[in-house]
Image (cartoon, rainbow, N blue to C red; front, side, top):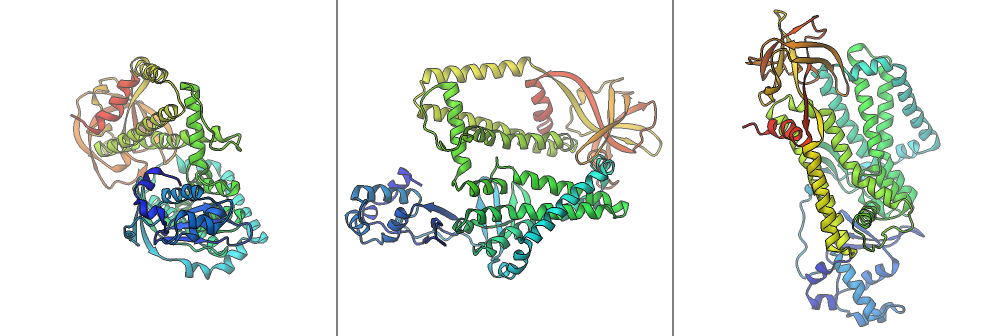
Length: 546
């Protein structure tokens, strides 16, 4: 919590006779062995040592450091009181002479890109579910939940061909809407599970509502009060309650899919797979999701990820630049690899999502290409920020500026050489359409790279779904003369509909056999490009055509 800057913002006379800020509360241990907790506002909780908590209870704006040391007794001295007061000031826990700003109760912005809209205060409501939570967390309830989750996996495995088909073919728009609605409802129940278990253990869920999480709709439940629970196992249970809810719902949907009619079966299968995968990702400890909270609670180490990231950066700084560094988590042998994984995994997640959806988005034209470019810029930004932080650690660790400059310069030179000389395959993605007359056409978004389309160019035809695709045939471009036209959305996205026509440019194709599907994905192979040129023509040019 310490921060010299924060201390400097408080007038010396207020530091000399400190007082807690109006929105700060000191919570005594909820049970024997439980931690002392200092709460700032509605959402910030700090676990502190008993001595610091006693000091926080003693500061009232009338006592100077000497009197506080006398009241607290040995081993406190005025100098130690002064250092502890600076620590409280660094956590913005002391009165700085200004009125406490009342933050919006119903709308809250959480950096970097989350906006929360509070809909209710769920404490009273969730208390009514204590008997149900007691039943579900009993040995019999937990066994039934595990059995249903496992039965769902077995149900998916038993119909593996059908699962593969559902994930690899276009589906009606109504099916996608039903799946999205089911996922949103499951997310709400997920958050409800967190709050219900927290309330069952005696905590107070703060707020519940909807949010825009990186522009995606989701639900949230504020369970920050879980840090006041006396036993770490209770905090782990609160963290995992949402994931348990997800996999049980996914298991139920998978089992029901065995008996559903064909029109509903594909939707249930996709919903079950998406919900299982979402639960698995939520369990990953390398990002600040439920799995990380559970791990941090089990180890009882606050700010585990941030401290492991510091150790990972210092390891990289020592390897690259030399210097001497302190370890934030010396008690954990795996702190460095864990920190390195925390550095890499978010980028891996974004890159995987781009690999799955980039081509589909780019087929929508400049708007979709702009979204893909934003994702690429996000990756580049975080890579650059990571390098800057490693360099800062090196400077703090005493590494020589000459070595830092040399390593950074050589790394940039190597990156430049790779961008110029390394070759990668280049393809242009579009769609195809079989007209009522039997004419087969290659369809590209107006912003696509048309320079690769020439007479006799080979085009691969695919059937694509939400997660996989399979090649269904090949065609040849019969003329490089483009025609402006419109095409159904199914020619660009894996959705079965003739509605929502989109502008496109068309090229005639010839095939040895009529495609099995009326619409689908088309891919033009265009040789190789250097990495630098490939990045430009693949991601930049389609987003900003000029």
